[in-house]
Image: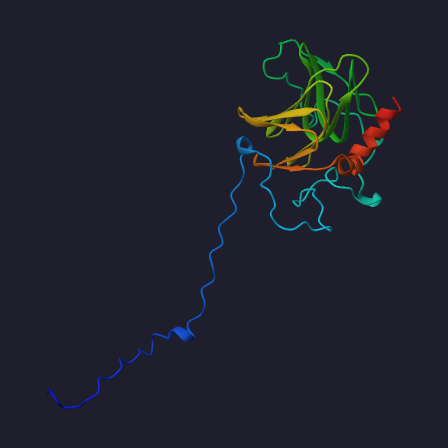
Length: 247
């Protein structure tokens, strides 16, 4: 009734509806990290954070012994200590590179892992579940586990194609590169000089000097960059450089 003078009452809050001051804060949603396909491999996005003198530019993802320098107790075995690979018993047969001639000549590595071909140093090590062959276009290595080192030798250098579980690394003549395959199929490609064309299902990228490519068993790829000094400090790279100097 008009003029009654009653003040309007504030609405009561429901006992089942807490006030805003008692509501639990909501955690922000964190987007899931997306896998990077090999076809989208590019140079890493620039890091806008101030430089950290204690942070290494080497990849932060877990790497095999070939990826970063390790203490002597965990260093990879020398090539001479590895048994010679024999086709069969889990060792793959070498397959010719795409577009190469059908004639393939198997190459048997020596006791220290050397694959003797003209103009190019090809050395197998680690688990050495690998096989090699020569074709009219160069050398083909089928690497299931272990590592393959390629460097220029005396004479005209050859192209070397390394087939790994999820891709193929075509090492250009005269280049120096290391390809590592772990037991779970993870693959690492180091380019010390020259270039390596990394391809999977028609997609890929060309890696230049200092590049370190990491491929998961599923084929997702990541590329990082290292200095010459960082690459040379890797135990497998250092071991092979020393072995090459003795040839």
